[in-house]
Image 1 (cartoon, one colour):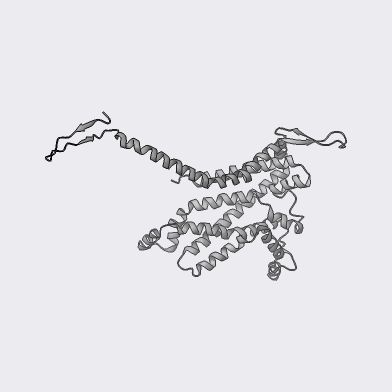
Image 2 (tube, one colour; image 1 turned 90 degrees about the vertical axis):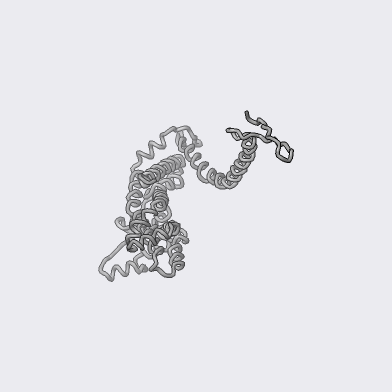
Length: 333
């Protein structure tokens, strides 16, 4: 039985001793260790909660509460009666605003435009970022710190400022790019309807390629160097090491940068808004979904419709990001 005491024979010196027998259940010593372990677990959980509390508060205040308020506002509409002399009345509209969103050709066109933009710009940007990261990680590159700083500088410039800087490089008469094209016999209008999407994509790519390259480079530096040394011993060239070892091991980092790029593409706003005064014929108020929501809220004072656009855009971002995440991680362990 647990806790049974067994008497031992007397020793030659005549001293008798008694000791508790060990049992299958561990006896009292195991039971005595449980309170200490549970106390340690409670302390760890409390520490983790304290560390996560600032993030949880900011996440609720910046994301959850605004999205919840937008969902609430999207379920109402402003109703005006008579000749408009009476004060407007806010009434429950149900899903009417969402019906308006999906029936609006401007919204569907803007979504198709940013999707087309992302299908071209995101692969180009991530491809350049991957190439820069591989070059930084190679042995042939010198002055690695200088190039890392150079890659990061465009991201350090705010997007609006970057768009203003590039807009001067697009304006005919003062743009060296336009002058260079004229000398080569090609007249390029960066603000035309055919070129404006390329002009915006160039600004976004210039701003974010270095940022993504540094994320990929950091992931490369976390790969054990022994893998590359073993491949070199086996006779692999630098290209084969990059193709068969580095790029496959960069799959999680590429997925992360891809998700961030998809989210940023659907939220495209600053660059077309800055270029719009110089390309009003090519960039309308509803050029992107966010611009359409902005116009509905601050141009037409239809905040409920703008809230519905925001909710639909948030759900679309989640669906596309989650689909890309599942597709990119399929078959990985």
